[in-house]
Image 1 (cartoon, rainbow, N blue to C red):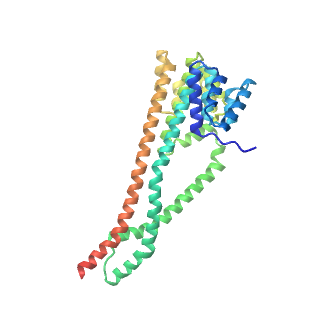
Image 2 (cartoon, helix red, strand yellow):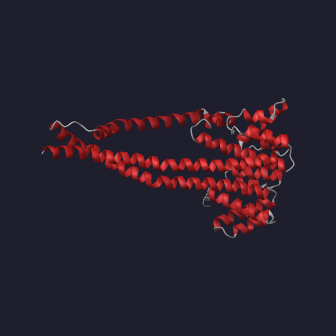
Length: 344
């Protein structure tokens, strides 16, 4: 048999989005899946047909998605949806966030394509100028007692330090890879996330994502009539997501010892600093589920804004680097030539 083609994140998100839309219109899950399969390629139809057989045998929808190779965060949305009952709403929420992530990744690739092409072309041009043209002009200018200009010095410095920078970068990546495979993967999930949020720029984005995911799932569970303690028990039982499983277990343990929920949440560095205040306010007014829902939406908006800001700084930075390098090569040769012409 031919190896099945893996579902892309975009395919996964769109599938769950359409499932959520059909379920919200009153479709049973099997009929919704059958309807969606009619619009998919033949290989996907076969996979969904197998899924229908599994569902009719009583296999949970989360296990079906796991067999299809879906992302564990999306499976997590389905897992919690099966517990609180807001199935269609949870599918739409999870698929929406996944589509945003997929769109941002495509946007990043698109933003980098042209600058990276320019960097490659500029690199070849730099090597040609540095190894062929510049030495000849430098020898000529030295024979005529002309001092090297600022741009010539910059190019020689760049040629000297850039390989050292690349070597340092590769060495850092090697060290990070060794640390990841030998130490990081063996750490508890909570400690892993604690270290990840310390990474500049990426850490703040991860904080928003972790806060959004935990708050929206807890909101769905509480709105379904489940207590906080029972909700944490469900988090703990979700073994497909070790981080949230450990998180639920740790919060539950501290609640038993008498600590307040907002104080426990505030002690975790991978959550937004406003999160404990939201929880305290929600408990005081008796609308914790709604407060969590509003805050999760706020986190999503902040997440999109921060990613967009980060993406917008990447392309101008690359263009500035390329521009400085090209102008330096141009002026390193032309300025001494003007000096020569003035001396004639």
